[in-house]
View (cartoon, rainbow, N blue to C red):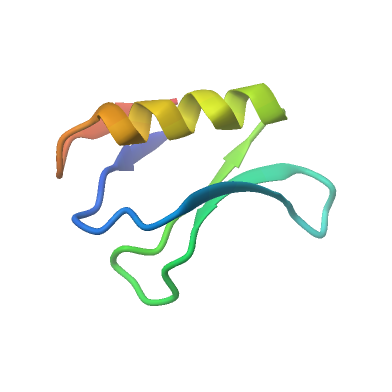
Amino acid sequence: MRIIKPKILGTLKIQMMMAGNYAVINGIKNPPNKLIIPCDRYEHGLEIIERLKNAKVGEVIYT
């Protein structure tokens, strides 16, 4: 999966979705800064959050 880091990152958190899988979500409600990134398990979500925090604006991150 390819993710482009937005200008405004917001507060990132790992949340369980209705289907029972995990996703990394930020608190922003309007696109283009809204993020919903599905992940396999909780540890994978933590890894995605670290990559997003260390990336520059507009940088492409592969998960």
